[in-house]
Image (tube, helix red, strand yellow):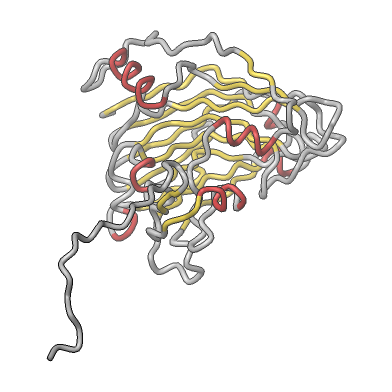
Length: 304
């Protein structure tokens, strides 16, 4: 006699509980699944490996400026192909594809607002060529720029790997053609010290940030920020070299090892003036606002 008697019954599948879309994100560096509200509390930094997620302009402005103080300027400016760029895909088609992917129409983002209830307002902006123009080894980039200055002002001219959205930072690679952390007064040495650096992925990083970098600072004349200067990057398959007014800032060999992967493919350009941050610190009461980055031109010479 059997101890148990089985009755045939149709078993119902347990009710599946759906997880709302947009609540979770996957870290491209350590592959951990992260609850998005927690990620926002950590300011878009992975709590497991310290990977920095891409921060969209609207999010950055929300973090930087006081609530309800942000005003948008120049939203009517749209991207146009004034120089008739030559590429595998027509520039106008690249613009259409970028608008479809990002849902954004503007060519530039400029905001004005307040930081820490300061009476003086600030404007933070960024220009980038992501999904509009990129460059590969065999390219020389030259830009004529007059830099802003002052405590908490952080101008930069740099580039990120065009595969940033797929592999994240630092696996995509980063080339800082120039960075300057401003200070007061105008003749402070920070206002005539240019930093040029490369960043890439390093699985052997002892701090487990999976990040390595190499670069050099270059001190120039005390009146440096009073005029325009030429910033140059030569991007070849075996080295990267940066210059200011024809004088070398630094040069790095990228022909082998961990450097060969990120620095042998397409990159896009970024121009920005950041206000505040871990490196320059926040603006002080002596910081003269507004500050502007004046860009005369940016030229790309390919297969030079």
